[in-house]
Image 1: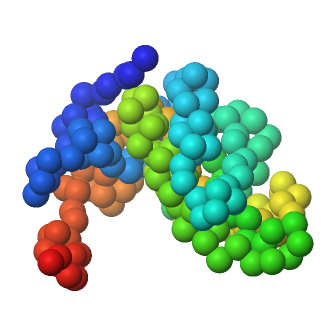
Image 2: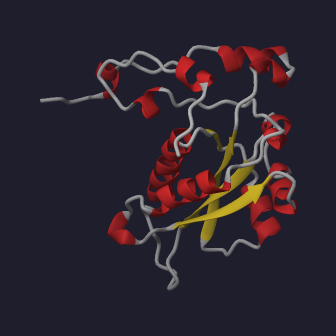
Length: 199
């Protein structure tokens, strides 16, 4: 069942060409409702979307550590986030550590692992928004701390952490600068600046 929220609709922006509404309306909040638990069916669909994303030679070099708010694993992830990320993430319903398999079992490098993981997380992010969840991806993480906390094998690297949950009002963030960022208009470079050749 697909859920929608009024806030998601209001953040939709005008695009220079028609795109799916789920893409036009997607945004990355920091204000999450701490009273709403993760919808387990929605979370399963988010992970399934990642599982079915494309990868070079079908190597599927992604792995995920999934932690729900209130669990020991969740607290371990929060403690290995940097700066302001530690302030707002405790209200998220779930956190996911996104891991790339940088070498295969024989030690041979997987040069496309980071790219492929990015595709998987992008698929998950779109599916999450479709399910009525909101996602915020973070690169401000302590990768080696996460490795120690979860005994991550050497051939895997934690690249990002994804927060998922139900959004709360911007004012719930408390800090004036954070509230302003939450309300700020979404911005993108014009398409003609991004496409270098279009013959």
